[in-house]
Image 1 (cartoon, rainbow, N blue to C red):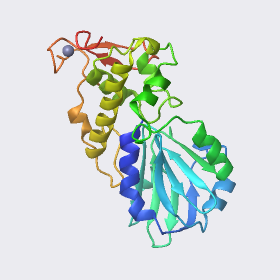
Image 2: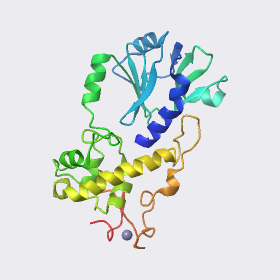
Image 3: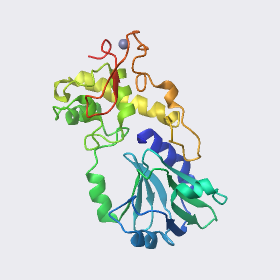
Length: 274
Ligand SMILES: [Zn+2]
């Protein structure tokens, strides 16, 4: 699933294309991506709606309309693009939401396996949605102290807590693996046994890696594409994720792979990470 850097890249690419435009009319190919909204209500709300901007919250792209926000959570196979020409038959096939813009172009949410979700929230719904999510890891107000304080409340494995969107948002499996390696922390350690100094390091490395991944336009293993349809390139800079059995770039030890933490793929160096 796209994590913070991928969604941030999509939003940065699309924001200048969409801000100030308006939606003339929208079409939806399948209802199964909708959460808490019917097709009828969604399409009625989008028709004629001005687009004030686009932003990101956690791993979701947020289209800011007049009275609503359209929250798009691209699944593993989801992407967002603005098309300035008619869609090809292949593009037609996987276009889930199509919003015709007032300049003749079309905003398309494409999702091959329809693993993503669309929410339409009014001000009250947005408030509830936003407050259920943890702080943004790149927010300057989210200091190392606040990070440590939130992480240390749990006895679960530190990697699981780092990926818990109620504790801190945006970090999924790829960047959790990378940040824990960079900080030298064993991913299976109980979060409440890790010291403040180590959390300071993890906070710093998490921020550094997320920013580096944004600079590389995200990580593309298969489906993820930027808002201009290009692959990202941070996969070339990953030190542990996807490298099980290969030598650690720091000490040469074979990297260990396990699915014991929350059934997700964890790769780490048992020598460098304690
Ligand atoms: Zn190592």
